[in-house]
Image 1: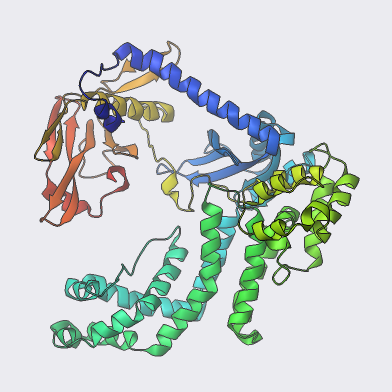
Image 2 (image 1 turned 120 degrees about the vertical axis):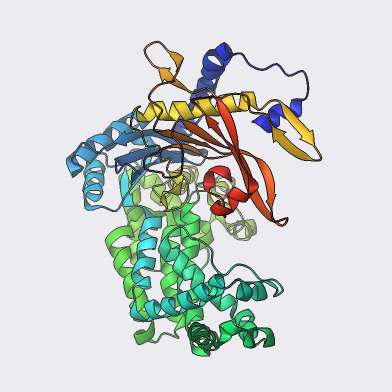
Length: 571
């Protein structure tokens, strides 16, 4: 925002205090309402998925987020603090039904929730009352549970232990790390995944990819003559790196979990619908594992048993089979398409459950599905087969709909859904806003942060550019909370002694000074611009604004070494 204002140049008139708290805020609310209204139109046209995401914040409050997914985007509906209620199936059913009635029961095709038994029962109760709604657990979480089960297999635990010894030795000895980084095309061995289980397998895969770099390093004369190579840990490190059996084993494990890791990335994305990939991903993963082990049952059975158990207990749903059948990418690939009866059963059951809600004739849908199945009339064109793998399924159906107008509408409604319960990507809690509160309410804290950011932007309009380095002149910060009864912003001066505010480019939050040692209460920590550390490492410079005496202290570049890599609020 500050960059956009600065780009206007001299002469820009700063909004008044009244405009910020009344006119601009009202206009922003209207914009959000228009956006939500446009989403509601999409819900009516192609239907939507209700996403229920439960999580625990830093104050150990049990919160439930309700979001609605459609191809146009994800809409946040509300967040409920369920800490003071017993989250049994009946209570959850009441919460779910309230949102369902607001969205419209006939507008919802899919309900995705957590995997808990209480959520499962509540989802089943909702599906029984509203037959047009199909419940399923979060597919991304189910796959992460498969990775968890695999990570606990004895031979993978052994591989992970050895891999940990390698990575610890490399990253605890800067000399060894520097030798590795000199290798052409070298990338970091360790990178974080969405969950700790994903991170484990990413590390194994990375070690396998860096096999030759590691082996050439431990045989390098510079390393052999250094003192690290003569220690017990150094000898163990060399032994593991030069063990070809270890490298082969982690290579096989990486190939086993690679399809599952790929599926997690697809399912966690809210940029496109994902429901049609669930059945195909599970089916091809099992077939791929069998092929990898050359159909030797004793070798592939431990992995496929884990996948099948989670699939049967959690993800085997008619809606997933129907989406798989209606995706031409899979249906028209005769070599890999599953011929199992459950696919057709799932498709037929979905027609039974959804046709009336979609106001369609079941007989007509079955007649038109025959044309799609046998590739007749508009599906007989060569262009149909050429584009089925390069065009999004919903766009493909819009193009070749002439012979089956009803099935086309049915397919688009099914294929426009998602299978994950979180709309921000990832199974980690990073996407949740951790705003703890002691003296003020949760909503007030959010408003405090928002208004503090606004006043920071206003105060940063004066920009000094000297020698290519931007220095922002911070004059003052003001903190406000919203008085809902008076419909106005009220400046807050008392009750902030224990609050610490952090302001970043894309993440801001508030913490308790008592629980976050090293930070001063009634203060605002803010990013102040780019700096350099030791001449070659990028750092983050910033300042501390004391709300008590209205003074600013600078965080010098040297201090940012303590927090390298920088926390998310300054990225």
